[in-house]
Length: 90
Image (cartoon, rainbow, N blue to C red; front, side, top):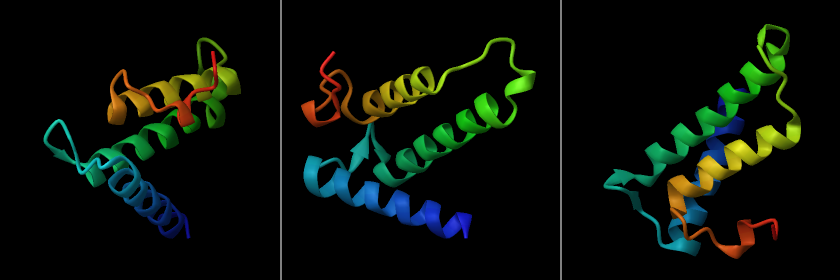
């Protein structure tokens, strides 16, 4: 079930990046491979910060976690030119 849900999510993002943003590669790498890596970053970060929270030296809030992974994700695909649709207005 998890793999199916993850693949559906990755497929949707790859489609949006290609169709809406005309992104087929990121620094010469296939957009699907980068999207899968970014999905893994989010999954592993959530596991580390929340499922294993008691083992962390410092607690990470949900807000901080969202800011960190969103920043990394957007920079991976858009560099410093993050579309306004991804901006929170700050």
